[in-house]
Image 1: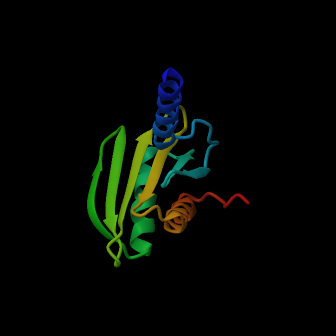
Image 2: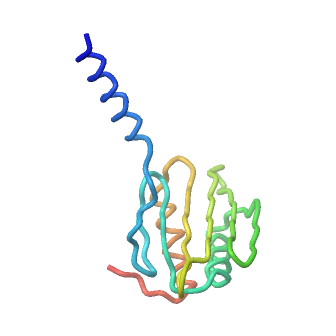
Length: 130
């Protein structure tokens, strides 16, 4: 009986851990990684440059900006596509010469996240890394 309880507790713990994960901790400058429905990225540009590039990229794709906010440490842009998908871009000032940002498109839409990231990189003047 005890063995069944221990096995059940271990199994439940494992299942719970599958649902929880952290953002990737190692990303080089001007690159991104897609994990659990979110594209995490860093830039060597400052927060204002990334914010402006984000607004330009979303405008190029003709997404409707539904909300935007910016201060010296954080920025957020909310948008909606014509098919109703929500897009969230959060930008955070990092350490020396680094800005962290994430792109989340509703329904785990990796393709749109990558297209938005690539367009932001173009507006920042960063060449695509192959």
